[in-house]
Length: 531
Image 1: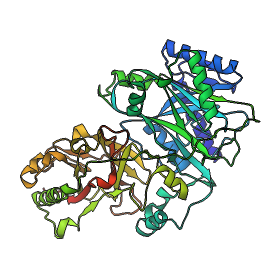
Image 2 (image 1 turned 135 degrees about the horizontal axis):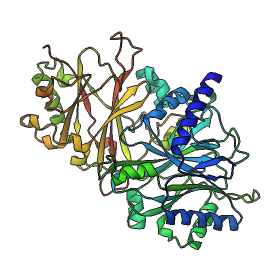
Image 3 (image 1 turned 60 degrees about the vertical axis):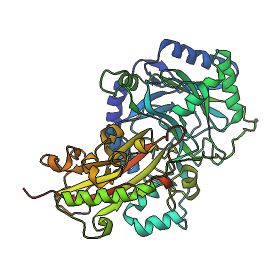
Image 4 (image 1 turned 180 degrees about the vertical axis):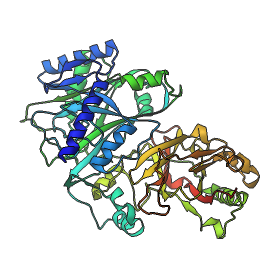
């Protein structure tokens, strides 16, 4: 452990240098890396701090950084997971200073990679505290969301729950994915569970009239009194109330700064910018600058009883019913197998086709508050999307995999679609295909289907070269940089591929589609034809 800490320490020094825009003292006495914040947003932040301090509140300042693929090595070493990250849309994480009496768990210090000395990506929450974010919002995109999570908690799992029994019976090799202890602190578990409805770009637009390229303000708090106090301070610096959005931390969270309290964290997701996100674009600049300010604000009057929030009421989710397209899907599966000269031997190709698992349906019911009840790892869930996955698949004996599904942007169930490849067991996202890359990929099979435009067909192999005639070019090579080559094919200890599909935010709603009405994707196993 000592050697590992020394290695982390050296890497930390390198990364901190790359993060620093400038330095100013934080309340902890450490050096604060600065994000590149527009001058007038910085002025608002300083004036807000002044108003709050004038009213007797204690204020400290943090900063923001990206969670990138490079941080996965720290996450794997610390928490034995990379959280199924989207490599095309790195998380934006606040790093905050701790209160002097706050317990800092060394077991999770590097869970999301190193922060500057004195700062951490997770935190315990004073019951009379608010975390405040002033944000220069990014350029227009398919999605922006802010969500807080119950990250770790003292306790254990409900081994009598339907979810635990299902996974332990049918998916025992991934039991620790869904029921996870903190590796270096086995007295705590990893719920990584959402705490309610997220604040996303649709929510912001509905309240404030616009989201992207605006300045918006966010309050994260378990105390309604603190929400009112921060809003009053904003009013003193001429911020309109409709520009402020509050994420309420529910009463079932165990607040407090001691070791036994719940450990929380917050994540910003920003995906599919309209300008493409290439180097030099406005969205790329936003990600590099991260023009955001994060403050911790607390009331030191411990004789005041906090005004807690009730448990969250999750918004109802709707969907266009896709189940009537099941016959088209099976026709496409069968036609693909025949075109490859590998026809199905069983009805619906059940000998070689697997249906994705819907993580939000019972018995798993991967929804933050439901996960929290039984101690299940919710894997950083959000109600802004549906989650489907299947795996694990070997790649080194000529396997080719065809993923066949409805396309949510065409059926009316998604603002954008993400078809991902993850490296198992690390749960590291290595590739992501968006709906724009999946559109019209089933057209070559139009004669076999009634609605080819509502489907996608995409292939995955270790090497796609030479398969163009069979894939129409709709094939992704999974390189050894993504998933290492297995030196002994068939070895169950080798890393494998997991496929996932997420449908984000059904149009004209604030949330993802009701997955009960979606048609689940199918993966068809094929073999590379002999030369």
